[in-house]
Image (cartoon, rainbow, N blue to C red; front, side, top):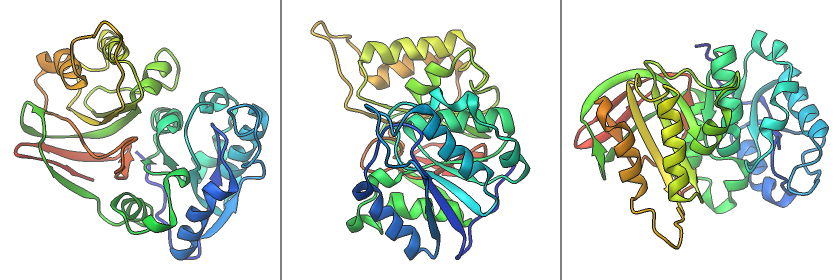
Length: 299
């Protein structure tokens, strides 16, 4: 896949809100952070608009993102927050200028729509990472923020964590794809759905019912998205919910039960997603996944 140019001091980065609304106070710490990194921050014209849950109506959110895609002086697009809404504008975006001069797109959660579309349709790498809504002035040096800086500026990413729960050991290589499980499920049948054959899939989710995790995993399995993977990385599965009559399985048990027949390495609790730690990962990048006593991910 195509790697956008890494950032250098003096570069411009744009911040937009393609989904849920956000306030200036929530974005301000990240602006200070990026300026500390030597970057110039450009805000979307309508970034602080609000229409119900959204950061303004669809046409405003689309216009802001389109402007950042088109502007050759913008070297990276940082999505301010997730929520819901990116899928409402994805098919009205023109990626022609962006494909001619690629730039980094960073974010997670609802931004999985952009990751999957850009990786699959354009063959361009993107960054799954923390967003301005997560950044506080007291947290400028935490692992999540520093990993985003490394990803943007081209420093090597390598993570090694003790295994808390795994399925099948082994060393595999493959292009990393994926993101939020609920969003991936919602993209099935569209031109933005990922091709997973021979790839390493990352999934994470938050605030979902256990039976729905099972439903989504079974959907991916029946659609042929799990059988031919080279590996599976399961990130945070945070604040899961259950019904009054229990589903009877944990997320680990659900996911393991769906993929155990395939034999590839699977690691759980990778520190990325909606939890306290959200380490940056480069989607579309060929990585090495080693699952043994530790889970190791090398970009």
